[in-house]
Amino acid sequence: MSKPGNTGLKRVIKAAGYSWAGLKAAFKHEAAFRQELALCLVLIPTGLWLGESGIERALLVGSLLLVLIIELLNSAIEAVVDRFGGEQHELSGRAKDIGSAAVFIALLNTVVVWVLLLIP
Image 1: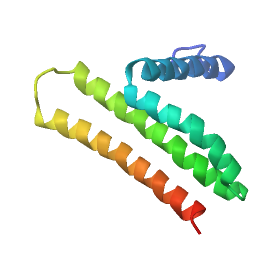
Image 2: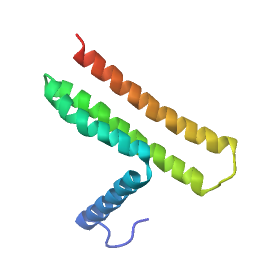
Image 3: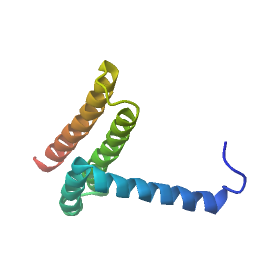
Image 4: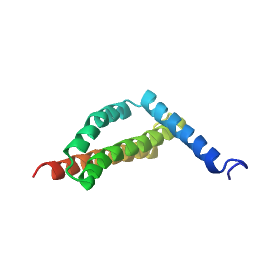
């Protein structure tokens, strides 16, 4: 339940602060996030330039942003798993593997979108 007073604009500002802290933590602690962000910094302007319509540009850029979103979720899953146990456990390994698979599928989606849109 939310605290009294955390409504409206104050809640939005606090939420934005938490989001910014999460982005900074991912950048600081997650090499994969930094690599994917660097790729996005190159490919987003490229997608905006190569897309011939608003829909094409949205698909090219959106597929890249989806990779970052999935990577953030994967990193969160890994952090929680690591927090609750250092010992090997089948479910911990499965959770990490499934998170990694989600990132892989997002990357594959990006390749498919870019190929379908840019190769006639």
